[in-house]
Amino acid sequence: MKRLLALTTAIAIALPFTPAAADSPDSPGSQGAGDPYFPLQGNGGYDARHYDLTLDYDPGTRVLKGTATISARSTQALSRFNLDLSKTLTVASVTVDGTAARFTHEGDELAVSPASAIAAGKPFTVAVAYAGKPTHIVDPDGSKEGWIRTPDGVFNANEPEGAKSWYPGNHHLTDKAGYRFTVTVPSDRVAVANGSLVSQNTAMGRTTYVWVAKEPMASYLTTVSIGDFTLTDTTVGGLRTIVAVDPEHAAAAKNLAQRHGPVLAYFSGLFGPYPFSTTGAIVDNAPGVGYALESQTRPIYPKVPDEVLLSHELAHQWFGDAVTPERWKDIWLNEGFATYAEWMWADKRGATPLSTAFSRAYARTADDRFWQIPPADPGNAKQLFKDAVYVRGAMTLHVLRKEVGDKAFFTILRTWVADHKYGNASTADFVALSKKISGKPLDALFDAWLVKPGKPAL
Ligand code: ARG
Ligand code: ZN
Image (cartoon, rainbow, N blue to C red; front, side):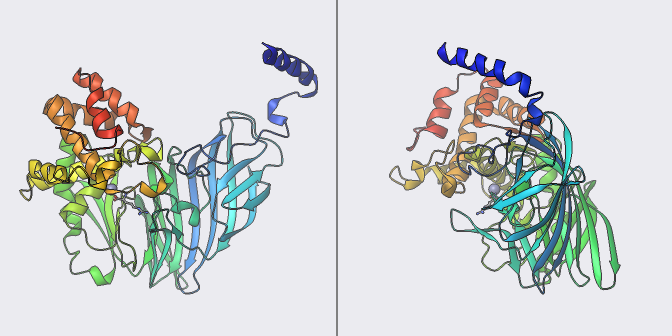
């Protein structure tokens, strides 16, 4: 009551002197999106709609010159807003709607103050010119990500935080946008990114590649990888399939494009239509990188993938890429689902029966530390990619399938994708959908498998 009165008085006094909140000198967007695992990742106060990235990279000098033109829409009045960008890169200028803006760059936060404040709910364009020698980021779990240099260019994988190592943006997974990449490299190198290759022009020893990714994409799924690649552009099962391969992997990658066909056809039958307009792969030599990543439409691999890895990254196109978690703690919605899809593909092609995959995983003894990490929240950024997230996540889906039956189970998966395609969803959304479609009270099941530490009983 007291507080309410005080507030009313403050408003009454402030009003005559403050014509519009938008002109208030003090309405900054927050410097993070509020994800407990990465508090400064992403930014508040606006929604990025489209990124136009113009990049020039010289693998010899390792210098990247870039301009990022971001079309956004404010979600509040903004006297100032932030972009995520590593301090390794130096910003030369920032404009908002074509007018020079003031900026500061501290830590990995670029704070932009437009010449005049942006009103709530308004489209605006911010352009950032920057340059420097990007370096990779070391993850909380010790792995490398971001702009990872290779002998001939860059292996670019950005989950969960790598994007800020090479371009400014709203880098939380809830802010999806369309992208256009215009990348200039020496003519003896190839630049490969997400989506469709729309042009390739060589002049004076340099080649400019233009790639367009039209379906909304979270920034951790972007890639601009550079190397001495052989690029093939074919149609497989009616889908444009663009594959870039480092010469060292050429022999093993011979039929890689064709191998996408049966996997995508099988998954489309189970999960609903493939959600993007192109597919493909990047196979690069990246010393010290031990993982692959499901970059949207173009997963990146440190070797030619076997059927297990190929099916895992392709399943992510539905689970992770089309439907993206709302918070990093929901990561089992990516990894548990992709692992279960990998098991289903192994069963389908006659390699390992699904029941064997499940019982092998379940055979871990109750005192195994594996059972201490509950998939619904692995605890912190360091544990994001722990085995339990992948394998116990996949086991959860198998147990759910046994409980509700195949018909309800696949209806749940297809509805999940149809309802949240190009957006975000949480574990709570998945639990609610499973209950609704199956008509069963599944709380005890999800509680035991996803939430509580310890080995669940069967
Ligand atoms: N999402 C990737 C996969 O399972 C793993 C990414 C691991 N990233 C990392 N920085 N360690 O396919
Ligand atoms: Zn995965």
